Image 1 (cartoon, rainbow, N blue to C red):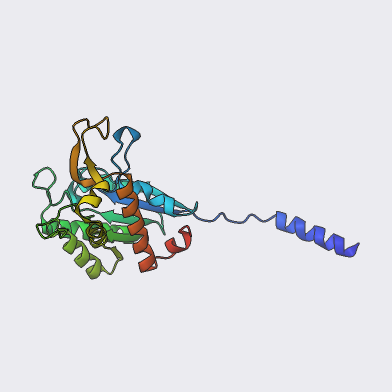
Image 2 (image 1 turned 90 degrees about the vertical axis):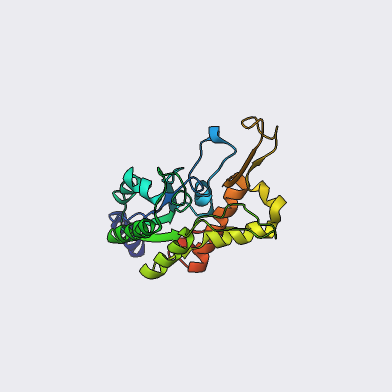
Length: 247
């Protein structure tokens, strides 16, 4: 009888306590069209960022703020970056991938190499100021083969600048430019078309005349890039993100 009373008392005491809920991990994505989330009406084009959450368990939420046609400069000027920073909480993550539009010849998009460098520094420092975690990523490769069948991954000086800023500020770098370049090279010139927006006439009703786009990806390509980004997370052993990856 006494033992039963003790058990009942313990249960009543425990019932009086509320245990804090496990904090959800939020990953913000800042980038361009290769990373953004596309609507169903924009099928078959896809960005790798819209698949990233599939690799994590339910405790990770991905907020994809990447948008097409933006360079670091226009992302800042349109206050898209401010929208991320204003919502950052301690322990959040921000994955930052730019370069394609910074390298554009269009005056509306182009960012000089020096301004690009300073913009990346701004991104990193403002994320750290909120006690959140910045991760820099180099731009994914375009599908361009030279006469010798070698992939040209160059996007001006911007991937190298991203690498240099990561080293300078001692922040994690996922080198998607090299990872995607190596993967596209392994597939070869013909097979790699299946990753990108290469469509023959009649392949898709939205593009009756076909399309030859060596920058943007279809679902197989976007999924593979997301997988390569996760590979980078594992290689860097980014805690606690690695613990929340699906096995």
